[in-house]
Every structure is written in structure tokens, then in C-alpha cells.
Length: 199
Image (cartoon, rainbow, N blue to C red; front, side, top):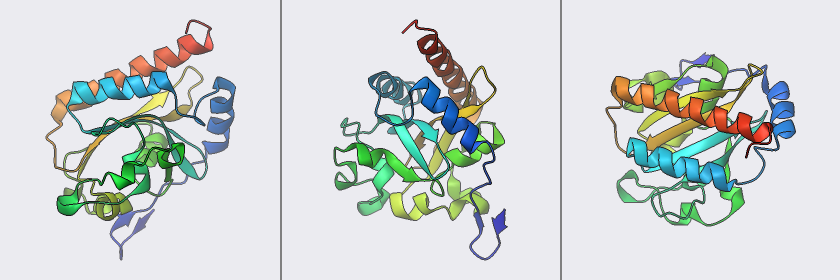
């Protein structure tokens, strides 16, 4: 769905959401911050040299960053609350330590598109894509680039995403795409091992 007046690609219809929520509950993930997912987000940020990275699970109404890396190292969800400083940088106030800061509305950001499309998404500069440039995260949070891949588990359900964002345009390129897809596959294996009792 596209709103030609706002030049915004509206949040896609997510028919799989109820099934996803049931699967997430069976796995016991997607409701609380998770140390293992935070550690994974830290590594993802290091590998991509991105200031913000997330392990994001999505239900019918909102997104939850069960794993989160922010530049101030609080791991508290800067991208979940909005608020920009001068120059489009995310403010420290937006990173207040609270699990509530890990939530974001489903119509904010690009992860819902990745989950519904079931394909990785590379936006080196979101302003180059009129259908994405109008997303609230651009003005409210200062996001300028995005790289994300879906977490598709053994049941075929897209549980959520792994993603990185920056407040500056980034030339992610083919290597960035391959990296985010490989990291998504690695995390899915970790989730499967956890389900099987290996973690």
C-alpha cells in the first residue's frame, strides 16, 4: 500500500502475525530483553561498524528489540523512543534505561517490511527512496540508512529481523547484504539450539 500524498510506503498487511506471535511465545522470546540477543546485537554492530543494531521481534501492533546495541552502551533502546539531538543524532534522553524503550510502533521503521517481504532490505540512504523517506523514523529519530534481514525459522515463520541503522548514509553494498543475511542465519541457528535445549 502506498500513500502518494505522503510519499510513504504504508506498513504492509501482516497476515502471518498471529501465527508468529504463537511461535514466539512457544519459543519464550520476544517479550523481554535477552542477554544473549544483546550480545548478538553488540557483535552485529561491531561486524558492520554500525552505531545501532537490533534483534527485533514483531507482533500485530508493535516491535520489540529483544537484543539492542546503542553507541552509549546502555543497551536501552535509543531507537525505540525517538528524539534527536542537533545534527540528527539520537539523544541520550532517548536512551533512558528501561525495557519500555525497546518498543516501537509497528508503523515505524523498515523491519515490518522485511518480515512481510521475507527478504533482506538495503537502504544506503533512505532519502533516495521516496516510498521509505517519509517513514516516521527519519524525522523523529534521524535514521538515514538501514540494513536488515528476516529471521525465518525451521517452521517457515518469519519471527522478526536482525538489523543495523545509522544516522548517516552508509554504502552497505553487496558485502553488507551478505553479512546481514549470514548474521540472520547464525541467529536462527542459535534460536533452534535454544529450542532444542542446547543453550
